[in-house]
Length: 155
Ligand SMILES: [Cu+2]
Image 1 (cartoon, rainbow, N blue to C red):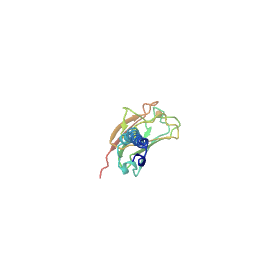
Image 2 (image 1 turned 90 degrees about the horizontal axis):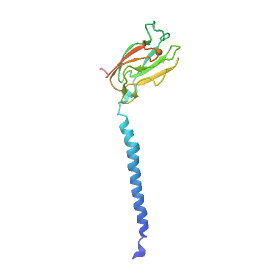
Image 3 (image 1 turned 90 degrees about the vertical axis):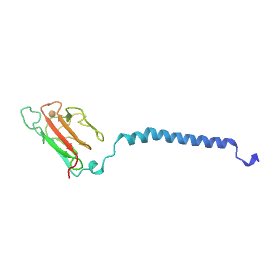
Image 4 (image 1 turned 30 degrees about the vertical axis):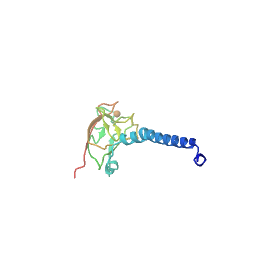
């Protein structure tokens, strides 16, 4: 009778394998899958890939406090799903920043503002996925200011 059954340690190895397998699955789910799915909210495809880009130029001479224009256009109305991908381009010969007056974050794209300076000829990009009203400036040249008003698409 006994000889027809596999030795009991085969069952032991089988059970341990199953337990290890389940444990690894649970750990993977908690450490990788859950944070990934919680980190970024679901955003509609047309907001992630808007039809247009909005360009804002830091025009030549922006570092001069006597010059009236710097961020051009200064006030920008943005509609989600239309032109909510914003690109600042430094057309000046001096490094500038895009810095919010009060720190603000988009729940999909994260904190708003250039992490350092935007050098001459370089760009800073940001994708807005929710409504915001943001006043921003340039850190080294605080007279350089701009306003963004991001709203939901109007039909
Ligand atoms: Cu500046």
